[in-house]
Image 1: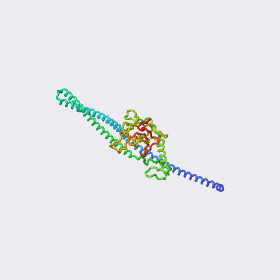
Image 2: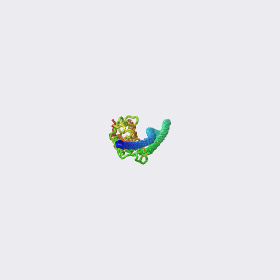
Image 3: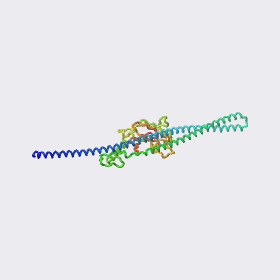
Image 4: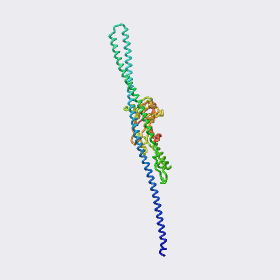
Length: 375
């Protein structure tokens, strides 16, 4: 009995320890279970985001493929219009020469007719001379008739080409509208791209729409990162020009000067690359290269303004491109007479919301008081 009495406290103590350990184990099991549930919820949220990203990526790939078709079609039409423009210019020159020849022949015919009438009225025997002059006049009239037929045919060809250019302008505007419509089909900032919630409790209900939650702290962090990226692109991106040339024709010599209100400057060939310490910050971002008229404070359109579509913005802001990390080569075409004497190149950053931000180091003077300054 004494032995049992002595062991009783030990037994009670041991029992308490066992129960305490059991409670600790049960508590740990409950905590582990909650942690597992938390991890499972987060994995589900991440899987949902990845799935929606894949779906959106497929839509974007299809959209980009269709947009590339439109872009290629526009470029082909622009090149065709350039060829037609050159053809019209050539035809105008030929027609002008024919007009001059016909006018000269007409003057000669009038003089021969006067000479023939004078000989006939003289009363002398000038039949042989009159016959010779009449033969010359007949030959000139036949040649005039042939030249006139050629002129009419060329003028009709010119009208057909001008109509084709106008039709191409309509097609370009149509492709431009199709491009805008395709872009409107995809939300540029859909909610499904929001990151999963941080420190979300397993018992916390999912947000409306089934998407993961974003805490105010995460929203602030995202906005801060976006602002830092914009500031980096705007202030730390430099343009390294390797070649700039102004020309009248594609294969002509480089211009040394530009005359105001004359169309001797039609082509600007520009080769350059973008530099940034964080190269990935500018990769796949959209930029616009502009030829800017400093005297009139306007952008020289990337392609000729189409008077049939005065409200079209196709090429109006300059040459738009997505930077892929490689050097860029631009064939900037505008066939209209230039109205200023001072021009510069400007590089603009265009963000996904369509807002423009001039690069701090993105300007270069190319024409100063009519003199080309690209060296």
